[in-house]
Length: 156
Image 1 (cartoon, helix red, strand yellow):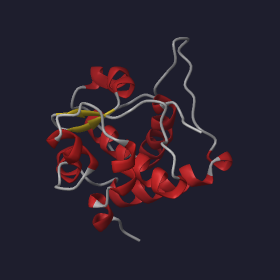
Image 2: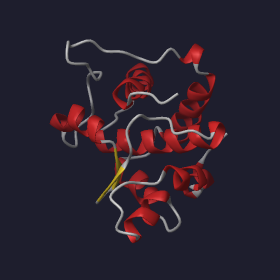
Image 3: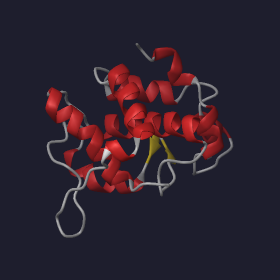
């Protein structure tokens, strides 16, 4: 079952706000990308109802970009909201694979900055680099499932 990116990003932001760890919009994009890769490896299905696009600094979900672009390079200080101004979060008890995927990525990369995370997404063999090299504006979800570049940095 694919999920709305701006809802899942609130699950990541909840951890950030609780632990008082800064997350910029660019850092959030890279964390979501790694979560999506991890989720797809475990389920065989894409996490999001939207595709990651190939942007200069790595994978980007346009809806998440639009939601948080006003923060620029600064830490995000509020949750994503829908058109009525309501914030939603995925109940991780109903999706243990999502919870596990976020926990692994958050635990491994929460202290990393956006530039370092972007460098991982640019590594040769990453799904982003495959799409970039092929001049494809969209990252292939099958390539995301096979993306092993971030795995060498997973802790625990």
